[in-house]
Length: 203
Image (tube, rainbow, N blue to C red; front, side):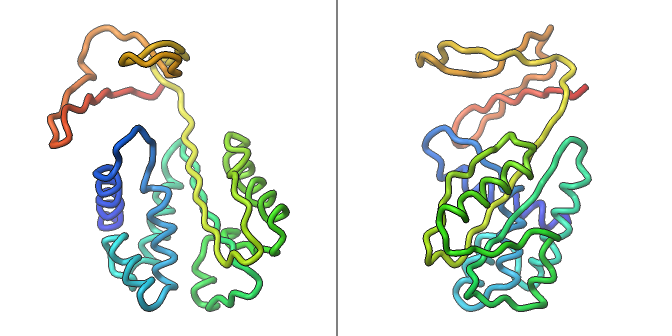
């Protein structure tokens, strides 16, 4: 398990090194999905997935299942992944049996219908927080993969919505809260510059 977590963290680090604008991402949602694909891949695709994962493909399937089980055990966190293949794609039974229950679906070839099915999956898996994935597979699409992470919690000091200026930019939405003291604030010096770390405790 620790090897999978370290590998996912390394993937996040590599992504972060390439980011040149504001974004939000988490390898925790993508890493187990890539690991399951690596477990069933062959040839160049297997090698490329191994490189992305930072883990041998032969260990990837078991590591992905352990990783997903770990996410399931985190209070307030729900995690799910989906994999849809075209009707003409034949899956190895042994590999398909190792997918999480309900993770595999079949594309019909009808772009609009498949798009609605993906939207329904996202809405169901996130309790309606994400209602659309804005993807309409083409009639010849052979594979679609998706992951969903949803974290719900209550904070000891609640946040409030804020809409205003930030760093000279106007009309920015965000969250704010006021606390006494700076005990939970630290600044890390990194190769990319200073990073502020704020500890927020859940209630």
